Length: 260
Image (cartoon, rainbow, N blue to C red; front, top):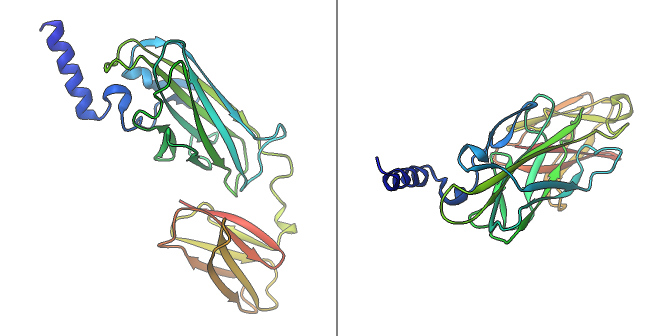
């Protein structure tokens, strides 16, 4: 087979897979370059010429660590002199390599696919470097650190997957000391959290009837009810609710929970 035919076949294959030209619609998940502590699947699986360029993460989590339920702002910068198109794949994971918290894109350069941040079509078309802004909301039930793992791609934008460079990185943030309250000092508990179809609300004193409210982060009322005297646990269906973070208000306390 001639070199021309080989190139044509490779190009057709990439188009069929949706990966052609820096995977125009976004990188497939799992290309952060890490699995546990081992470098594995990355942008380099499709793009050559290997490692090169740089990528760095800035995130406004305080030095003492993050607080459950809080939202933080971050920027992943991918750069290489002479590059003309940039991409990324980034995940926030716990020590078991499971998704931790919620990542959201903060500009039109990137998007979220299956809980991981990746580029949009031509979203990273800049010269020499590109900044991908995002927010991360810590899970309300966090009990340990979070690690951000990423793979950055610096491409020459020539329409082929050759002459491109990748860079890996990871950064771990601790859970802030005393961020998780002792249940004995709280009035109620929400579980499971995150959830999909329902939540349970368990209060620690049930000698009287008390009202609860669930609102969005914007303050829009979603649900209101009363827990009757003598009942300590209430189940609420969340089927049909939009994915995201909600606030549950009970007496003088407010807790966050997440619907995935």
